[in-house]
Image (cartoon, rainbow, N blue to C red; front, side):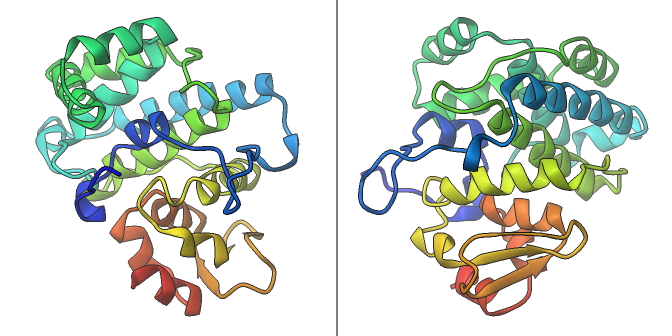
Length: 247
C-alpha cells in the first residue's frame, strides 16, 4: 500500500477518487450514494448551479487574494480554481490523457496541472469556470455527486482563507455529498473509524452515519471538510465522534 503523508498535506480530492475502492468492511461492493434518491441529471444540474454560484463568489475576490494560500495543501487560491476549471472543461479522455502525459504519480500530476491552469488571469479562470459549468466529467465509477463535492469543498478551500463569501448549498446537496464522502473516508486518509461516526449538520437538519454512533456535530460545510480530510473541518466539529476523528 502507498505510504501517505499527513492529512493536511493530502488535499487532492480527485486523486483520492481516482484510487477509490467501492467496498464495505467485508470487501463487498457498495453504491457510492445511498439509495439512489436523486437521478444523474438532477445531480449534474446541482453541479452546474454550484459552479455558477462559485464563479459569482470568486468574482468578488481582490486581485491580490488569488496568490494567497488555500486550505488545499500548498495550492494557492488560483491553483484550486485552475483545478476546478480543468475538471469542468474536461472529458474522461482529456483528463486521463493529461494526467498520463505528466509522467508522474496521479497526485503529483494533478497538482502540476492545477498549477499550470492557475497561471491564467483570475478573470479568465472565472469566465472559464462559468462557461464550462455544464461540463460532465466525473471519475469513473462515481456518481455526479462526487463532482459536486469537488466544487463545494474546493470552493471552501479557496474562499474561506481569503474571507470570500461562500455560496449557499442546500441541505439535500450537502447530505448527498456527506453520504458519498463518508463511504470514501478511508480513501481520504480518515481511517475506517469515520464509518462508525454519526455526522450531525446543525444548520442543515440532517445526520449521516449509524444512528447509535458517536456524534460529530457542526455546520454542514465543516462536516464536508472533515470528511474530505481537512484538519480545519475536524477542528470545527464537536462531540465524541469529533474527538475520535482527531485521534
